[in-house]
Length: 335
Image (tube, rainbow, N blue to C red; front, side, top):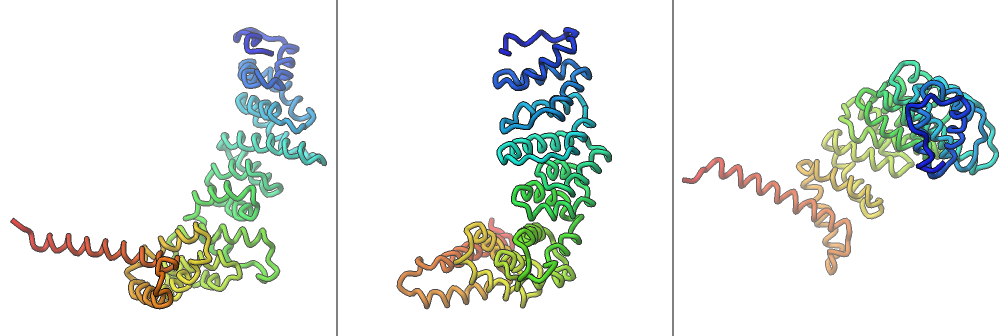
């Protein structure tokens, strides 16, 4: 069907015509326009769309089936989307399975536009059975704390991690108790699965952006010795922000000694942490600078850690000097 072949709106289309419109979802040129046409047909388009979605053959080219989902969502047919996502399918072909998962993700995201208990319960139960990013994303829109365990579990899945992280960031303050528990190994670290370690890494990262109480830090302290270097680094940043002065300095020293091997994004986070806590770390940073300058007398700029620490010291001392100068002017006004 070409753009010029689209029937004029407002007609009372026959059932046969509506079924032909559903078939036109396959058109690369006019598929999107056909969605609008089907929505304009109202409730009479729901059953042909349902038949196409539930009984049609999944294929690697998945856009036509996505369009059917979008039309059904605009028609308010959430029961058909429930029915579709509840189907059990065995699709051995990888390409076809990948395409059908794209359709399922679209259906789950469309359901997320209905903010009702019925939809929430369906999405939560679905996400507990299957890790699908669209379902996690849709569930996250409800911002309900009782889904926190589902989101935490999704952090261990590479595909579901981004929507799970976003969902948890919205409720992290209310879910902090669950996050603290989930940050600790649930089994012997040597037997920990990669997905479990990824999950804990995501949880600790979320905690690093929250205010941590002394009691919470007491529970999290073992993470300083975690076998996962990334988790240990994040735990050290938390310690520098919230622990006692002695622990702050010990954790800061660990961060400084880890700078050279850390990923650039971790280096930035370490620098920000040292900046935030410079008043408590001034002497420690000065001592580390002095020791490193002795080691690299000839080429100080060849030492990356030395450059970073010197930059922190220089910028913080300039700020302090400026503040002291401004304070002095206020104390001794001229004129």
